[in-house]
Length: 238
Image 1 (tube, rainbow, N blue to C red):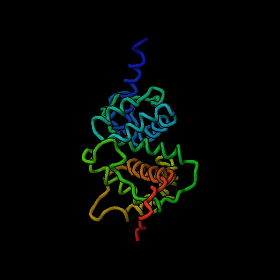
Image 2 (cartoon, one colour):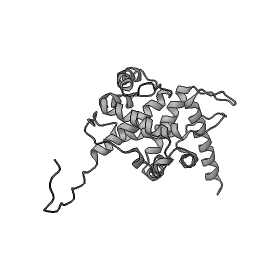
Image 3 (cartoon, helix red, strand yellow):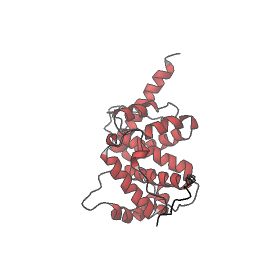
Image 4 (cartoon, rainbow, N blue to C red):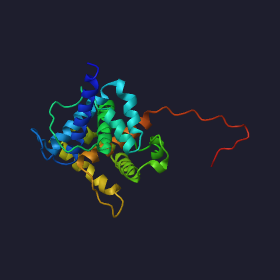
């Protein structure tokens, strides 16, 4: 009996790894079950929603999201795998944990949980956010791609927050997703630096936008600190 939970957790971690690979590309079946890229992406979305639905996992999720991608983040992510959230269908696949895909899936789930029932926001006036403040690590330890995707997502979210909000409320590969995505694409093209090409999937794009709009909405709702008292001789900046 004492070994049952560790074994269940190990199986859950393996299942999550399978989903992360499948969501990135179709699975080459080695067992009984073969799932498509869309099915895997939806299963990953359901898994992330299940994780964020429980407050008892909030600290561990925040720890994972504040850890730069790498071996440490991957290990934290694997520990988040819980048997009660893993989809019931499993197949034997070539498994490789992708913390980046897991990360954006969590942000999509967090956005839907906290802001899905609220109206479209106005975040244009939110002060600039500092990417290095979003991690519990020095700036030098943060992968350069993180700065690029955060800047891109932030630009699109500020340019048309209602369109991003509408996209994030659609189901992956649903009939509602395509028109919502079409509405976002012009802003994406505008925000993309000259000479850069998009090389990530639709699921990753949704996640980057979810992270950006989630953080902008959190910043917009954060209490404004009271200004420090200035000496009587101080002069206002003009």
